[in-house]
Image (spheres, rainbow, N blue to C red):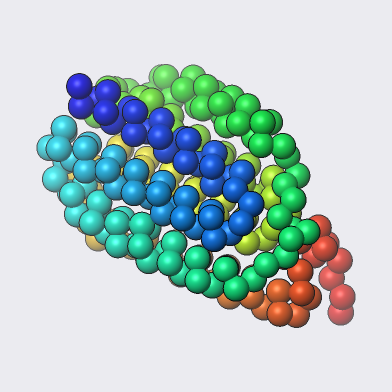
Length: 215
């Protein structure tokens, strides 16, 4: 029963990833990212309970503070101050994005099929979801004209790496998760600052307008 809950939570991660990619407003995307991170926290908690991976309880607390509260708040407040309606037009229709996300998920299931690890053997769908998040994050980056939305592509990749680490190294010290999370926070802050400088200087968030460098 618990494995069913875990796999369903992993499926919900895919759904929230799709919503993050297709959302137009960055403030809406920040809220959806917070929701996805909450699902990730519940996933950590359930895996910790089912497999006696007690270190994941600490991971879930860290993930809640940083991914559910801190990062979305930074993104919501800072990115909400910048708006460029032209940049909100997506390059790929949401229907096609849904098809691509489904195809990525199926391909990742085939990729991880030969993997044989103690806990992963029963949670291969979850491992497939963690791997799929790298490619969904990349899809978010290349399918958006808005450079702010591209930041969330990185966030999706980071959530995927956290989930994969929880599956293959769930007995690792809590300090490892803290180090990875701190790196992610500083990376996001750096990208937000860079986006603000670009918007202040060029008055655009459209990545298509940033293809020519002027000396």
